Image 1: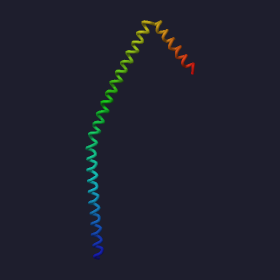
Image 2: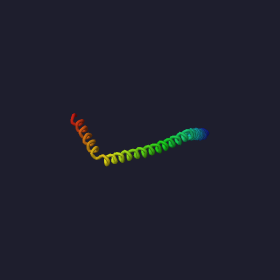
Image 3: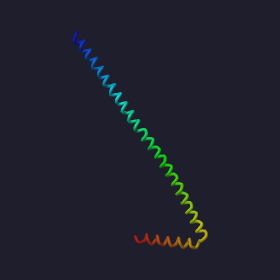
Image 4: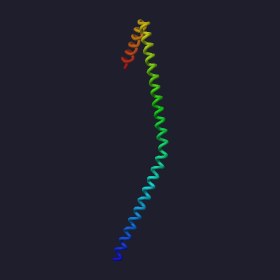
Length: 105
């Protein structure tokens, strides 16, 4: 009977030791995750901020490019209206050049 009591006490101690080890490991893991979070959070914020600035800059460049395209198209239309014969001549020359380049292949 004494052996079974000793075995039961030994098992209980083993379980207590396992619980202690598990709790210590869990605590250490939580602390490690918290430290990692503290280090990663500023980096994430900085990355998000830079991405937002890049997006804004890209949008501004896109608007500038669209304005330049519109101005070029308007300028070409004005030139075509003011000089219709020159426009036809330029179109003919461009077509002849393109045909020449493509027919040599």
